[in-house]
Image 1: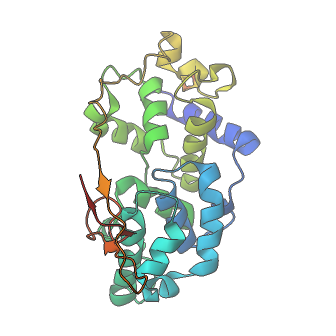
Image 2 (image 1 turned 30 degrees about the vertical axis):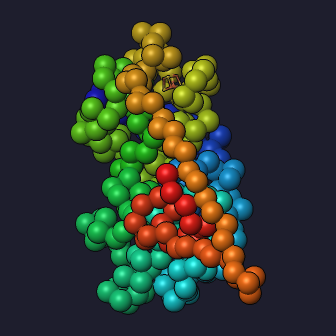
Length: 264
Ligand code: SF4
């Protein structure tokens, strides 16, 4: 890609002036950053903030999280959805305790073996906590890069191309700031609808903007319809006033949580 130095510098200048102040940016503790990255995987920033702060009150480090009962962990997660994330955090904390002396690993290949940590989450943690030059490719970044290069196919069909661009653009001198700037650009300027191209530091280099195709890119494919299911639930109690509840299997939707017995 041409103009890499200009793209880096203009993004970093914009970030210095307009980057977001977020609680997990005030720390370089890999544990706290890891928690924020996992919470942010499928949840918006404003929802995550109170959960993040409460989680760190309950489980301030890897050791107390590893030692906690799973029900406590799921309780702390209650309301955030996608509970597999909480179960994976818990299991990963136990693995770090057992295999890495309770210290968050710093090697990308090792970090991506931990449950619930894929390549982009690992990049987010390692760049933010250790200033390592490891790229990221979350939903925001895919959208920004797809527009920057006017990607002619949906992002999921060109992940290798997008990873290459994220890697090539990443500023090796300031990887922490660069990755956070890229996320902020996607979250606040290069938004899914009506991007604020007039305020964008990459406007003059952006191919989608130059082709006036920013509302068509990233391209999408029609989604399969959301399935609808009817579920019958029974509330059953005995003469002692005890109510029958059932625990869901660990795997799958809402795994490990309690519910009234029922069936689809
Ligand atoms: S110019 Fe517009 S479409 Fe292009 S990266 Fe900036 S905000 Fe996104």
